[in-house]
Image 1 (tube, rainbow over the protein chains, first blue to last red):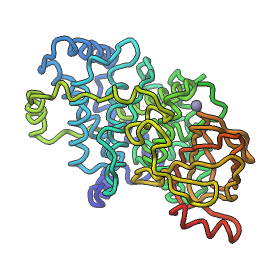
Image 2 (cartoon, chains in turn orange, blue; image 1 turned 90 degrees about the horizontal axis):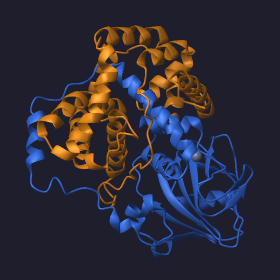
Image 3 (cartoon, rainbow over the protein chains, first blue to last red; image 1 turned 90 degrees about the vertical axis):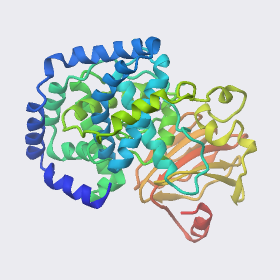
Length: 217
Length: 216
Ligand SMILES: [Zn+2]
């Protein structure tokens, strides 16, 4: 991410990493996307669309996926540190990949969203690796995750509650991992704490979030 | 596969979020591919990630991108440019996930000797270091700590250190303040995939002389 873009972003959105402020922002965001009730239905439909696409290869149908997922994937990638241009390129690549791979999508094993985001995440990590000029690795060599993502649709209300309930420092750690794409080492430097404490804080936060979204064991 | 040692939950959490440096992510991916327990946890992190993505503003694509992808869908060859997976299914001792990078057999790699009983092969990584380390039976690695994260995945044989015994599929996820001294503890020696995110700290003069060989 360019320094400008980053600063601008931090200034306009989440300039202070204070728990209450984050929550205020989240609340604002939420009121602006009050399509809650049919979200579950929508996700169901995407699953249908993917299955349908494998058979019909209907471009119009595909563009429904594109219109829904591209802005989400883009924001996900920009958060990870991709600049505008790279983020868009990767979004295109990810969705083309979706188009090619629809026949390997199993609706009984993954929601459309988890499947598509996993493709994007793997592309992103693969791209990081290829940024190094002396890399001889072939294209798309990042291991394809063949295992089953979760089938459950994440209840974003419960997740928000769980985030609200986290101690401030743990919320901040989660924020830095998900929204700033930072590694444990970078977080340790940012927050001036030992890596061991970053890890234990994340462990605790993960535990609480998992339980609240109905995952975990 | 039944593994005894797994990546820390915090590592899986960052992996699922796509925020691990690529070197560390590669090690985690190789473990998760064979460990059901960790697959479940990564699936949970993905759920959390999707929930968090929904809680923030989305970024619209630039105006021409829609037309461009429509064009690309019409390009000849788009349909069959899918993954060339078949070639990786054949015989070999390299884990399937690493074959696109390494080929099928460890013995075909151009190993570089670092010290008696110790060979390495460097893999590409943009953040952190990623290497294969081949340790001859009985070889003791220099005792060291780290300044960042270190993830070690056993690919062949096994080793022991202060933290326990690590067999094929096991991951050692070591905090920086931990100092350890691994030893290859079977007759076949040991091959590990090791990712580090920050330089190692060696204790004592002789090991420090080894530092250049580790390229750190
Ligand atoms: Zn595991």
